[in-house]
Length: 573
Image (cartoon, rainbow, N blue to C red; front, side):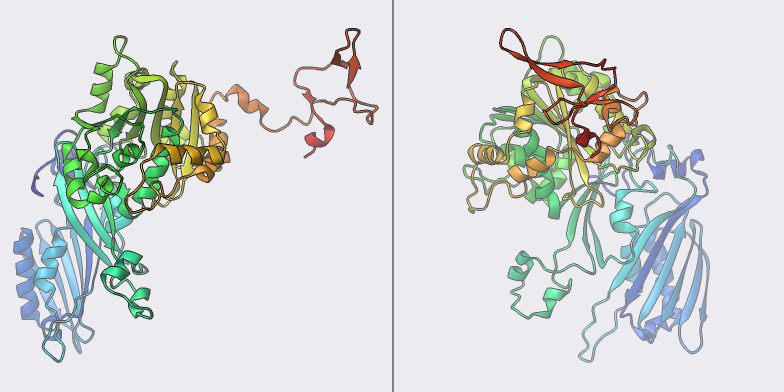
């Protein structure tokens, strides 16, 4: 793996921009750190704090310009430190054993590694009556300041001013524990794994077994032995929440897989963490899965730090990692290049199902997802690579609301481009959209299923019992006896069959408005014509038997274009 100081190639990072002439911007980074249970003598000593300041500057490789520490009355010390990179300050409360530190720099290197440097130099824990060092609680938060946000600064890789990593992990001071498990800088992106524990977390069943919790144990109501949430970030965009991975990926994969009568050859775009692969391999009809992943380091990091995502050992007939299954074929290459070069006029109809797990479309500035989701040639090649009954499945970002503006002006403008490209492709016969709130994100997550055959509709709208029967016949059983698919069944599919109203609303905000949108609602200025059922003398339509014995519906008035033929009570409901 690369070291922390290794620069990322291709598009400029925020660090690189800050180092360049473009980086002379009114912006910087701020790190707040609070430590508790610190030795009172240390906190009340200007001399000891001065040594800690010098040690911190050396560890962090900052250039110390000057500093001033002042004792307060009756106790406590405040210090202000001037650095070549900017400044930091600290204040102590010896009686409470607390120190607060505020670090600001306009430099380009991340401040997050400085948390460890601060703890090493200022974390002088106090001792209890037996001489044992007490636990040292900490709180820290990291964020960006100023007005540097723009296309250049947020262009590609690590540390956008606004990011999932900032929202879910680094910015909050309330998170109980934050641990950067690993950070790897590949030639394509920055890969990070984080563990976090929130103050309201409680132990899971597995935690209780691990720590032998008995009924009435007070730890059941605290986060003391709770397993933290593990998250995978790619260029600060969250890719996976380990705790909700199964819920999310089952819903991502199985609705599309079950729309195909017999999926044998499947492709996964991205998916280096292995979770999509795991779900695909649950289907006993599958003979080959080709995983097209541009970054081999995502696979390496996921295998090491998130092995649960690609664990197939519990399925009957499987052993170990899903990546080691003989049906799995991993191709390390750019998906756009792979499909556009391999699938044209000469070679078509290879894959029964393609599942895209590339970066979310909320990441329009990420060069990897941008090339995938805005490339018309790529979309055409993907559709050509599908068999006549082929299915394409893709995650399309956070679910919209009915009050959102049209997509091109909304939160995810690239989604409109993605959906339009697939809708307009001549190979597309049906498109379905559905969403789930169970992926761990703040908002529900939406998915799109694209079908080459209209037969896909009968599978999509199958009854709940039929979907459950398909699952029973299709998937491998588990050795543990647990259901193979835990969070998707016929009842789930029944809900997905009814597209949320917000999607229809946004679709009809397109310009020009699609013709079918004019059929929404009723025009109260139009006439309503109904059939005489023997009780309505004013009906415009009546049933009459003809000479050949057949019956027909006739009218005695002119029916204009735009009028309605329906019972009057329906037009008023």
